[in-house]
Length: 392
Ligand SMILES: Cc1cc2nc3c(=O)[nH]c(=O)nc-3n(C[C@H](O)[C@H](O)[C@H](O)COP(=O)(O)OP(=O)(O)OC[C@H]3O[C@@H](n4cnc5c(N)ncnc54)[C@H](O)[C@@H]3O)c2cc1C
Image: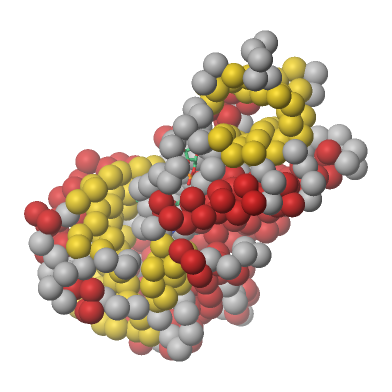
């Protein structure tokens, strides 16, 4: 053992939105928490940085210091054509830069009392007799519990035999362009989404302070075509493709049905658990929620109320998986019938209101399905038929 050996109640691997949320809540409750991240902070992460109102509401801290723009309008198009505008009187989402958002969340965790060490890649994890040992930068740390918040393909899931098949991930590619020559004014408070043109995904534009973020994503097999699709999206949105900077791709992990995310004294949160919404690609909301559920489960374990952390799996099932499963169904129908889906989005104020309700956190997929009334059975049948042959 090195001179830096230390013992904690919980070690959290990864300081993204999921890890920092769990760290902040656990430290605030009095637990001794260590959070390690391999990157030097502030660090960026390939991400649109769109935080829905639903996600912001899931947090008990104010994100105002790191919000770039408040979004109330959307330009929607189908296969790079037929663009139309929709809006909502209240905020639908906020745009952020992940470098600022994640540094802010980690700072809040530190302020709550968590010990945060960046530039600390975890290279080895060992578990025996209810104690976890984590090695990083030549130091070893021990804890009674371990939270894997290390994103897609992380070391925690691998070493604990948890998580889903990494092959099931979706992929996305994004880049930035300076908001100059009127581009910023054109997209003030307004995002763009291009639907129906990319198998399993869509193209987007998110305005930030001094730049615009554009991206495309879809099922894993479309990966090799994403660069060409991004160029086509830029040309449609009248953005000079040659001025793109910071081109980056990354996985969006999708949980296999029933894949284990907790065992013994270890659990996974956020992307490590594959909790991305399949239809929207949104992962920050689930990162916040799973971080909170993880902190609840760890607190109960530390207090001796439970013998392991498996109650977390059931809590994720109740609070997130019901909606994620339904999102799969909506995605299947959307993928089969993009033209009809976009027309409904355009002409049905009721459906548009429901989509805005989802983004605002005032409605869930489960509630939307319930409101289909007698058409619910028809929808479920259609989703089943639509899903045949699609990746899942
Ligand atoms: C191109 C793209 C666009 C997206 N756009 C959006 C969007 O607009 N809105 C939205 O809600 N979601 C979006 N997502 C999804 C979103 O980015 C993720 O769901 C979210 O970041 C998950 O947060 P997390 O905390 O689980 O993991 P992450 O944010 O990935 O954080 C994981 C952390 O773990 C650290 N780590 C990894 N391995 C180790 C190790 N061995 N040791 C120590 N640290 C380690 C990493 O450095 C990282 O800081 C997008 C994803 C992609 C790829």
